[in-house]
Image: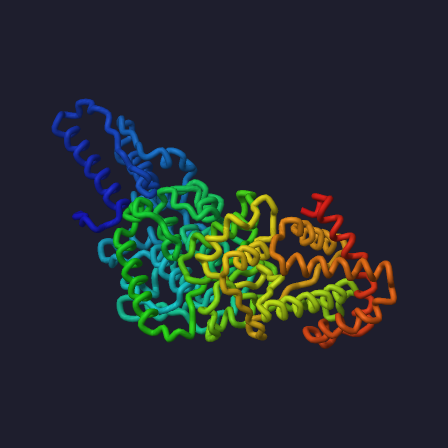
Length: 552
């Protein structure tokens, strides 16, 4: 068989090994079966070649001094038999009973033996997964040649998965498939996928979920720890680790990897780097040509718990995500919110380009048809906080913002990163606001329903006070005069209410009007109860946040 230079490295490794074995056999024949010198086959990091040659040498070269060697990572691979081992036995003519839940790879090997040599060479569906990932995240359409609708490859399920969960449709055409992003972007979350029969799809799908802020519950991925890299950990840390599938998955998700890290892709898909670079360049040219100034390039950033396995905190997780994207703006979200309508509509027609940081609205809603008293008190309090946030921001004296719903220029966030107080577990949003004001950045505000994110009230008094203590615990680090002035005024007026209760007659109508502006359904007696309790709650939160570390 002739192997062209542009074929994957795995093909070259297996081809070279088989040629060396053939030469070894010929020397043995011509030397009248004189014992040959030991033969060492270097398989680099090719697990597929390893599985096949283990069977091939056992069947065709029994007892011969032949050693399979390779890269250090290959020697760490799990030695247990796999579906590739079974496939190799079938290709060597061994009778292997058909199992009820048989791997597609084994079925494909049976069909190959039955139809050889008339079976056409088909493109690899596992390689197509990275193009599905690319379209799911960035949109658009592509034509992929050589993929068949009646394929026996188990990884063909990638078309069904991306259609079901990510809105990427597949249309089979003569000689290949067209894939394109549908208009449906109301993603289901969480989703559950069993990768037992398609483990190679995991990196692409996991990174797709991360980019689209979809929680993934994955099963059947245990053996991925023994691939070219520990792919479970590599996905979490966004690392290539000399693993061709990790390199392609990261590039398809628009992560930047070095040229040295890209070299491992030649193992299975040598043309990928050139193709995805050209596709991305063409996309950029098209975007530039059609940009009318009504939209901006935005990435959605959600610091989900899954990316924080290094236990370095939310700020480190945010930094890792923001550094990985290359868009002009990032839209920050907490992972427990209902994202605003504008996120999924893709409508960026407001003039956000004129601002460096944009404060967006939040609204608290209970998931319960009949909210508890604690939930109703939180909803009322949150309405007052949001009204104050928006009014001060519109006057150019912003005193609050929330990372649950915030747009910021990527360069601005990175420039301010060192001022976000890494010694404090949270507060990235407020310290970002302070740093932005200190540096003279343009602070904007969008107070519209389509840009409003939904947050949920806490369901226990314990969690409620711990959250408020965390908020209060950041107060000593604030340096912005507007923030300090506002905080001082709130504390002073509430202490005055404790010392002089009748002041509530003046204070209540003012604050009730703030609440009603944001939450018209709030009853007066809930607002009044909040007004009575608020001074005591302020004191508990303040002293607890300043003197107790249990809140963190």
